[in-house]
Image 1: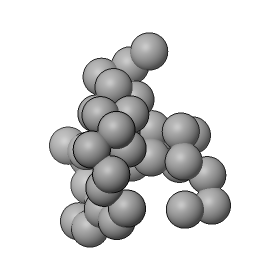
Image 2: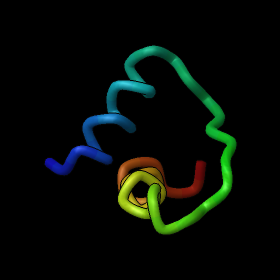
Image 3: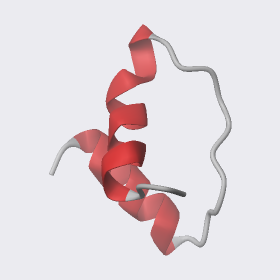
Image 4: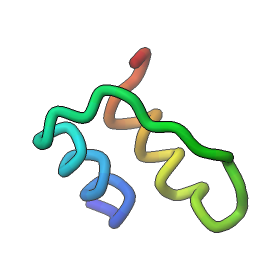
Length: 41
């Protein structure tokens, strides 16, 4: 599990439904994890 995946799973456990932000070099791992862990959401 990557750090990004851990963050996404933690957000899901807290009931977070939406994540807003701008995709950039500094957060690509988190964006990738959002797509992999929660596809279609």
